[in-house]
Amino acid sequence: MKKFLLSLAVIAFVGSQAFAQTQVKPGVGVNTTNITGDGLDATGQFGWQIGASVAFGEKLYFEPGLFYQTNSFEVQPVGNMPVTDARYNGIRIPVAVGLDVLGNADSFAGLRVFGGGSALLVTGTNSDFLDKDMVESPQWGVFAGVGLDIALFYLDWTYQWSLSNVQTDIDQIDLGKTRGIFWTAGLRF
Image 1 (tube, rainbow, N blue to C red):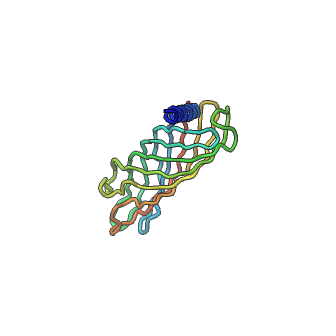
Image 2 (cartoon, one colour):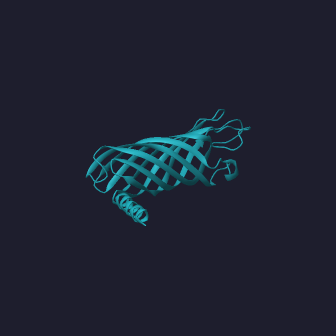
Image 3 (cartoon, rainbow, N blue to C red):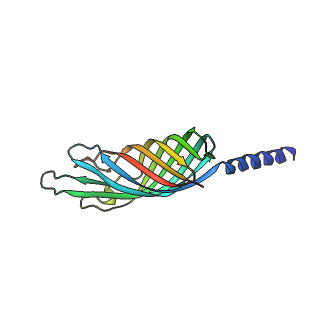
């Protein structure tokens, strides 16, 4: 019985400390995505994302998130194929580990660095030559970034390297992997 009560007390203490050091961070932003494939000239265009993350910790923190995201690029003509825009969207699940370099979670202002991995679960496409079944899902990636906190606001800049090809079948056209930049702004509670 003593072990049970001690265990319960430890869990309650750790839980209360974790909750005291938790920040909910809704955000919205823009992104640009380039692709690395061969035999295709494509230029990244702006997409967008909206969602939220939850940061656990004070100086060193763990931050999972959930965002709806669009990726977009313009494909230049190859042979008889016309110039076209390719866009696909999905649910991005980033999981980051970060460090408050200046300040901490409770400071008025702070500077953070972070990195981690993500999965993009593709939910649809809007393209003349790319349909949902042709797009790899999930698309795995790793990222690194820097964030600025001022009062209740935050601004994050993130660079992501894709570990997965965009397409499931690369026999005809290889779109390659994505490289993306994300700017996200929001509130921190």
